[in-house]
Image (tube, rainbow, N blue to C red; front, side, top):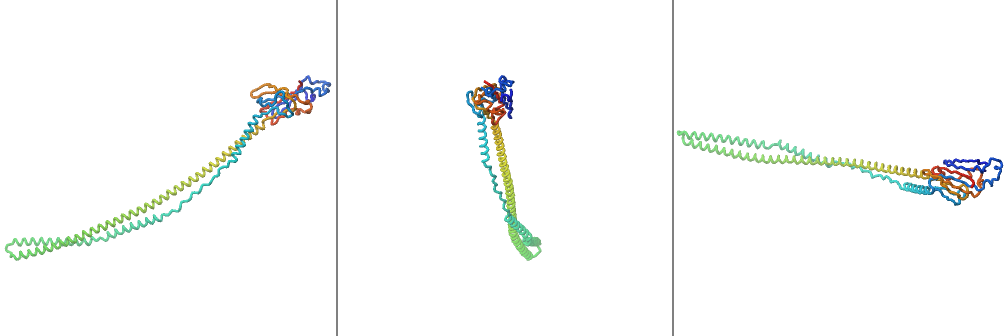
Length: 380
C-alpha cells in the first residue's frame, strides 16, 4: 500500500477541510528490493495523526491514554448542540402556542334599528283648530263692529239735544218778551200775566226736553259701556285665539325640531357603529398580520437553528486504537489547531487500499468550526 500511496496524498473535503497522509522518506525505497519487502515489516509500529482546527478545546472528546473504537467520537460541539436544541424546543413551543391560540372572532354588532315613522297629525290638528278659532274670533269682531248699535242711540241723543236747545231758545224769547212787556207801563196787567204763564209753560217744556235728553244720553252711555265691554271681550277672544294658535304652532315646530334632532343622533349612531365595526375589522386584521408575522419569524428562527444544528460536525475515528498524544499546535484568533495521534490496533493496510478507508468520518461536517483535518501516517 505504501508503494501505491506515494510520498504525499491529499484529500479535500466538501467543507474545505484537508486530510494529509504522510510516510517518511526513509521508509520508502526506490529500489525493487524495498517494494518487494514484506508489507507486515513495513507497517510495524505505525500511528495515525489527525490535525483538527477547533473553536474550543471543550469540543475535543479524547485525551492521551484513552481508548477509541472505530467510528468513536473524537470531537463534537455538544454545548452548542444542547443550546441549539433548547432554542429549537423553545421555538417549537412558541409556534405551537401561537397556533393553538384561537384568533378572536369578530362578533357582528346588533343592527341599529330604524326610527319609527313620525306623525304630526295631533300637532297639526291642534294648529288647524287654533287657526279656525282665531278666524272665528276675528269674524265675530268684524260683525260686531259693522252692526254698531250706537248709530240709533246717538241719533236719538242728538235729536233730544236739538229739541232741548230749541226749547231753550223759546224760553229765552219768552223771557225777553216778558221783560219787554213789563217795561211798557201802558199795557194791561193781564198781558203780563199771560206772558208769564206762557213763559212758565215754555220753561216746563224745555225742562221736559232736558230730562228726555238726559235720559237718552244715559241710555246712550249705558249702551256705549256695554258696547265697549263687548268689543273688549271680542278683542280678548281674538288675542286668546292668537296665543293658542301660536302655542299650537310652537308645539308643531318643537315636534319637528325634536324629530330632526333624533334623526341626526340616529345618523351619528349609525356612522359610529360603522366606524366601530371598521376599527374592529382593522384590529382583527392587524392581529392576524401580527400572528403571521410572529409565526414567520419563529419559523425562520427554527430554520436557522436547524441549519446550525445540521452544521455541527461530529468527527469520528477511522480506526480503533489508543490515543497516543494530544498536542495543541497553535491558536489563531478564535481557532485552535490540535493534533491527535492514534496507535491503531490493527495494521493500517488492513483497512483497505483506498485513502478514504482511513479518513476520519465527519457527521454534518462544517467548515465553520473544523477547518482542517490532516492525516499523518508515520512510524514511532
